Length: 498
Image (cartoon, rainbow, N blue to C red; front, top):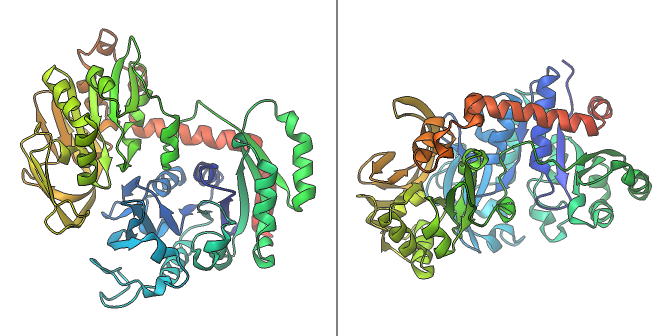
């Protein structure tokens, strides 16, 4: 196959669809006989994934690797920031946490990345005492990846026109310069202001960076595409950059989303005639993709809430993962959700805890070293006989487990250990597990839904079609077909070879 230039999908802002467009092109290049791989130098997200070798990356790059048909690797997302409060984030470098960093210090030009020293675990290429040059680290990761794959499908972060962050930007156009990538600017027309956002994003670039932007994709269009024919011509004349496609909004393709903005569009209330599953809405919720499969089940109404009345009326209550177990546990006690969950369990409801939610369902959660913050111990909800201690070491691994006699799959990402040393603990109407992806397995879903209603005794049509892997493969193919239909793929290939 021809060697293609790296391609970067950058954005006019957050949640414009960069991750999904990048996933589509990972699948398109794979379908066309290439060997692509995704890359995002720096990601900020609480949704993460464990690589086959037990390291941690952003969930979006794991999804894109699946679309490309390859195992995920830390070189695809060498730097991951996991917010632990409004002002601090855990820094994960090459799949391992190296400590917490204040947001101002991280981004301020007077505190450059080169001055950051690991707090817990050194990066593989550094000694524990050596300062870290994040720019050098992410560039080296890209170079390793580009030596093995063709092409590299890169993703930017947020907006490319944040002028105050230009000097410390590791992920957008400075990364494109290093990679010698062709940049496609993605804009979300659904939110309005598309002309201003596209023109402004390009006009605010320095000339060297402006030359890297080779095309525009307008995303999430609703209505008759012919209505934007004049708009396409206006944008091209205004910006001097071709519009390579206008991609319609879709509702019938299911790709896991990483950005917590997607939670705002989730259902928030009970429904009649369904098995109502309430996911407790935590302030630091992580890995909410754990519930995508259950949410699509026709028998289920899955919704997110911290309303105590709705929690008590739900058939199943799920405490999800969290980046800050103690802080969220304290908030559950303050807002009455903890008491509502306990009361609902006493009244016969099923309660499930995943990762941090599993820890909260126990007897105590202890943080003697203050890793999560000033609160060092709290009583749990007391529904499971475990005590948990937050530790500096993080467990990250993919795993296989047996549930109801059938083999299932998932992955673990958690900070802290529970004294039972069990990844799954089940008592009467209560299940706790450290395994993300637990609810992607048909045996688990059927166990939870049995006897909940007459409709729940019927096998889910979605599960009859096969396993979750087969379902996701079908979705990636449908996404690729959707993007092929509305984007000038031939012109992009021409761009990537000249």
